[in-house]
Figure 1 (tube, rainbow, N blue to C red):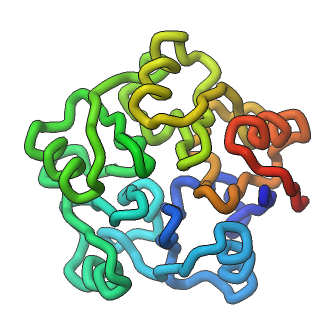
Figure 2: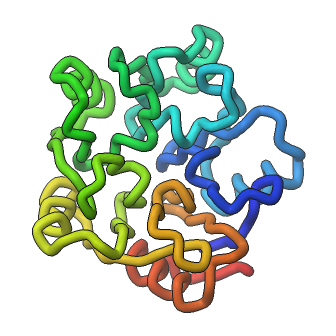
Amino acid sequence: MIRRFNLRGNPNLGVAISATDQAALVPPNLENKDLQLIEEALQVPLIKTHISGSNLAGALAVGNSNGFVVSKYAFDREIDAIRETGLAVERIPDRLTAVGNIVLVNDHGAIINPLLSDKSAELISGTLDVDVERGKIANFMITGSVALATNKGVLVHPSATPEELKLLESTLKVPTDVGTVNRGTRLVGAGAVANSHGVMVGLDTTGPEMARIEESLGFLEVYL
């Protein structure tokens, strides 16, 4: 399912929501109608929590079916809210705290910002149970912002090189293609949120962009 949706007027859904095939982290103060739309699109339980006291869970957390890794400034009550669901969660002990922006992961692998420490790389690998590779995408180190990964496919910044696409496919073990969201936004990971069940994009996303998302991420139903 592909659904177009703005969160309180903001089309950058990937900054606010972090989704996996098991759960989605969402701001705790959303209206019921918004929560229902998100749950319907992603088809997973919603964990209503701040991360580091912020509504930007998509920027400050990232995960897969095994759990989440979060900013080192995440509060204990936020960690507990995730652990209560049975998922693993660990803080990244690094000066780079926008974890959702710098880690691209699915259930098969992860590509991380090259500046992340070895300790953080090992923690990501252990918590999410994936092999980790360091790399850039389209010459950006914010791998989580410039690509959108699920267990079905990856949508990537249009300037990604053939070598980067090969790295993505070999690490994440799913097909990869380039595209945009929200009428030309190339930071597709920041502009959209997805798991294997569905994807949500901003209201500005055009028909051709949605067709490319459908092809890249394997969704057949489009709800406007």
